[in-house]
Length: 170
Image: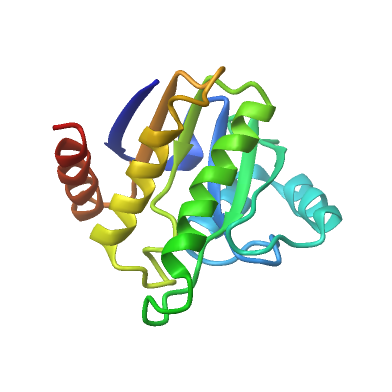
């Protein structure tokens, strides 16, 4: 399983699955969540309504609808409070449960955003360490996944994830 960091727009990813940094209602919001809902079209809202929400750290899957990705894996990450309210554990579970969903749907390529580092204010470097170590540790369990990418929205996020990945691979 190959792990890569790129900068771009996850709604344009031609992959088996993209991961949506959703809120617990799954009904769209700001940031990447809003962009995914807008790009996927109205059928995504109908599908998400049927899922009746999702707890932080869990993951649920819908079709990609108008996106180039076949699947959207929705996972609400934690809202950062102070690091003492299980935020790191919840973030790890968001990545882990998303990878398990991707395996369940036999996905070979999966793109993640940087979960919880936008409006949820999770510290970027700590989030990158949790995300990448979880992804790398999942390699032993992966039967279908061949490539995972972190799709950074901006250059700062890309650089932090790249630095953390290089440190983990040494």
